[in-house]
Length: 121
Image 1 (cartoon, helix red, strand yellow):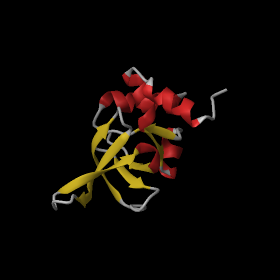
Image 2: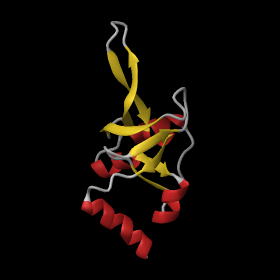
Image 3: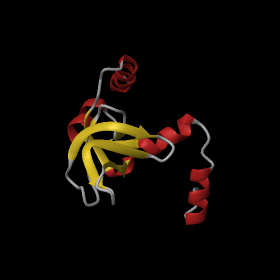
Image 4: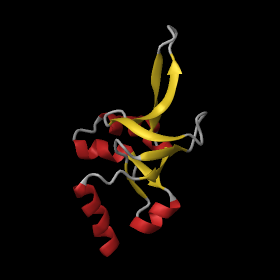
């Protein structure tokens, strides 16, 4: 059983070592249509996917993923910016768990194959 202690949860995050471990931080839920089609509840967010923000002050915003930061678990969405004190626009980081994937980027053949494996099984 996993611990409920916040200190233990934080320690586990700091101890992540491989890309496979960091990949778990970047999973987001699929929309109902995609969930029925691919028979999965969540999938890793990638650059090019179209996502909807589900929590926070930007709730309801839809946009294309511009950048993904695996070590921090953050996703940057095109057009979702704020201004710095100097007035320069800067992209807002959103945690992947607060997003829902609306449309997948299927340009990668390996990603398509992995998705279809689950459908056939």
